Length: 499
Ligand code: GLU
Image 1 (tube, rainbow, N blue to C red):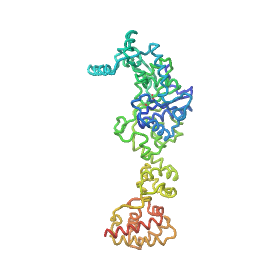
Image 2 (image 1 turned 60 degrees about the vertical axis):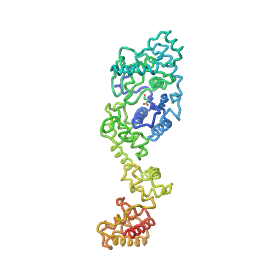
Image 3 (image 1 turned 90 degrees about the vertical axis):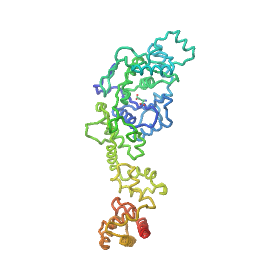
Image 4 (image 1 turned 45 degrees about the horizontal axis):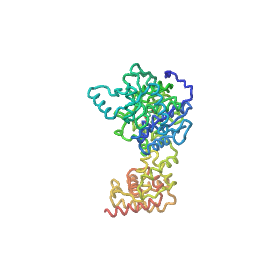
């Protein structure tokens, strides 16, 4: 039966899956696919399954499964069945389900829907070259499709391990409906006899995928657009196996700003890199959800619950979605500003501990970090930006040019005088908070015959080594009297040395 895309009615319990191949770090496209499948399942109160498609032995990458699961976990995309959690349709690694695929392939051969092919890699290679030379469409020439029993026995006797190929119908059309692409029609004569079982005993993606989607009772296959052209083959396979196909939704491509497919050229593509660059998972989730889906073309900010509530495949577009890093940064800034001060401090600590110079003692004093962080929370778009902006709160030694201490219209001598006077007055203070500092330093400028900007500029450089910082009095208050006094003394020494 052809599923009806127009109908929004979902009657059976929804089961979606994310079926990554562990061939490398998961990139934003993979995780966007996972997110949409997860949102659809959660929206309908269904189940979200993770299945590892690890049948391509040559392309398997050590550690990729952990990286994939780690990215899902980071974004809070929890799975009801799959690695680590198990489930009644397991195992959830295809490499542990080989028997099922063998049985399916044998059944297809027995039924006359598939056949053994003994062609050598060399022959296939020559065939391909010949096809290119003659500008013919590529594809297996079906040499083994009609081998007689005697010919087959002969090949077996030669000790050749065959592959199993699907007997694609030579005429007719294959049709299916896609939630996003509508009615899709493929001419069967454009599809070749694809391999189902390889000579190493592993199934191809196509066979394993349809067997598992059936066995795991997947109701909605939500995956990247690149698989759209594989779907007619899958539909034919479902048909040959006598299985009802699931419903399909092929998600639009993710493009770089130049509208070509998003790739390394455009910068970071793996989700882990965004994490390391200080993006918050809630911002990333929000941003990824808008890559191809929208609620109303204007709402940009969604909590996880709002996404679950409003997500629908009907609102997924066909056009490629542009990955706009500026928008992600903006969104991340919004989420950072929305964190409580405490939460912001907690999230910043791993970045500070990773990026501060090695001589800063770890673990960092949490109470102190809590005091520092509100000074920069409004100013950063990523957690990565926190360390350079707060370095001087943690580092013992500041490294700056003595000339920076000398404000416009001043010289070395008047600067030393201003610093010494400030030092003296600061020592006498009973309390050391921003209000008290302001009440002390504004009149002091006047007393010294300086503009406030001149005195404050000098002090700022002295206590931070920087010319731009959060408000001076708050900064000094957080640094504390001891540090400020030591640094002012160092500044005086520095000026004296350089004169
Ligand atoms: N293993 C395929 C991939 O990594 C899955 C495609 C599908 O969802 O069917 O993209």
